[in-house]
Image (cartoon, rainbow, N blue to C red; front, side, top):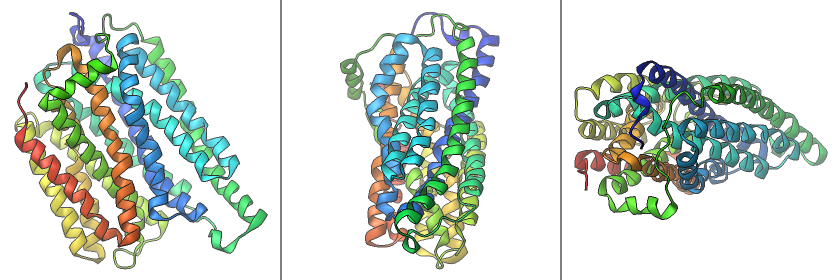
Length: 416
């Protein structure tokens, strides 16, 4: 980082912080809509749990592929221009939902999701370290947690609206149709999804113009130029390496639970809800994360970040285990309550891992964002286990993830 940081102008920093917090709301909502898309697409294309999880695989694989190039891009053009680039790519991905709907093929949605996620990856690489830099490094965990609370606000509001619009009219069972009737039904149902994402694309392009107008609001806000090999050298730092593992586990656990939630709550042995009602309950899972982040932002100013992370991970694991061991409403509410303890995990792991990197912050951010590929790998494994056994049994995978996170928090590795 250059000598002059974004935090050097208080008024500018506050304005930029508000705008970036708005981004957290937008990409959180766009990401959480995947949990509503999965049951919708499973119904349209008669998919297994594992096949349905390919939506998450396509989405989160983009983080693994795009993160390092995104870090290089942000280093060359700066955080603010990087944000604009991310918004434009995300909008293109959202627009691709229209040809996907017209194609009548599941693969088209996977391509659209990959492009949309590529744009969100660029946003993550640029915005996460940028918001952390807008103030004192000692309070970076608290500041990033506060911003992530608005990410959770998006994940709370969007699934509720999305489940009403997308799942409100149940998809016709493919088993009852064939030939032209089946194609027509899929096109009609898919068009509903496409219209929603076109609306999202319009909003993204408007926000991109707002950021473009402020692209020169901060001088010298570009991180140092990096290369792929330079970034990989950071893996020799224990803090970064452990953080990548913890972040991989966190995203995998959170996405796995969220992706299975609607189907889990529909089971007669749990709550026996219909698809739309289960989708509405899903908002409580993400809403818990929102509440936890507002509370966590305050707690992190008083308690050691690593220790608090370990406590939250332990509570999340116990709730998942409780859901597995019980049934009925208790099982459903226990799993929904996990969101409350997921709350501080991403921002805390992220900020602890970047601590002390200085000019290498953008490189570290790119590596950490690669770890978000856990949202591609672990949900696919969880879905496959659910197909082979039961959804409750498959929840053993998130429990393992929370153990890994708790260990990272307890170790809170010192700088190398």
